[in-house]
Image (cartoon, rainbow, N blue to C red; front, side, top):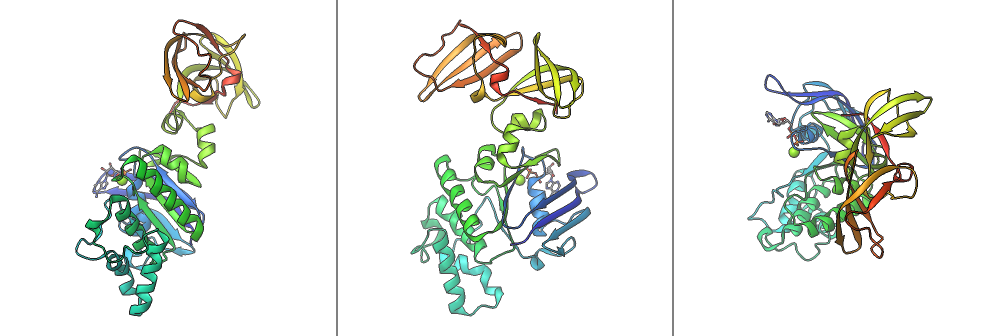
Length: 348
Ligand code: ADP
Ligand code: MG
């Protein structure tokens, strides 16, 4: 497994479509890194530049120690799994998996053994003789994964590999991909627009917005310490409340939220308008100081209660696993700012 490095990489399509804008990035060997962001933010273009299917307009790309910036796809040790599995419909599963090995100089028996081993890795022992049409969507995608795996690439790329699967299968196949990646110590770059999928499978997430990187970090860090309102809103659920940073002393800021003053880590912010991000599951209703609110809506959803709370700060969404003594619509409550784990973020 190899590292992947982008040094100030830009991709411009035609005259002026800037699909990737001055991106620098280092992916360590043996890690699964996800490119996450809304449609059109440049994820696929980034992936295709690693594969050599698109050439960078500016900057340098390295795979391991090798500068591959101008190297054609066929000379890069990379394979890619697409959203549409792109299996050959008239070939058996085994033939599909063997296909890429034909050009690798293996003997017929060796090719067959490797293809069988690949199918075994994705849990499809005994399916080699079938046609793709005789498999479910999830199984077809696993064949596509096996086909990429048997090439033993330095880097394995996935472009929204689960988009064509239903929700239950998505979860199952993503866990399989993660297991195989960890078992074999593969470097994987994984593209998705689904934040839950990214949180579940990644060592690190690269959040992209408008052709650039908004934030890079492990799932937990992005969730707990989003760089700005875009990341806070895109990763997990967040209540975003406008606030004002009144003053900053050292690491701490004095913040006014709907008339309530509160001290919080400044996270590099300066006095002026900013936003408080509150995760619904972290919101605590307390006796004493905090934001005054009224319970507007109560929904019982099995293992937890969902509340909409309204106040001078606007409306927020909260969840609580106390289903035995729930609040009722109309109750006056207090959102304990200190207890609710608010994070100060700059407006994106
Ligand atoms: P994502 O995968 O995040 O949805 P893409 O990398 O596919 O984003 O696209 C990024 C931007 O580049 C979009 O504005 C898209 O319309 C544009 N783009 C992608 N491919 C091409 C192409 N071959 N020619 C021109 N523009 C393109
Ligand atoms: Mg895409």
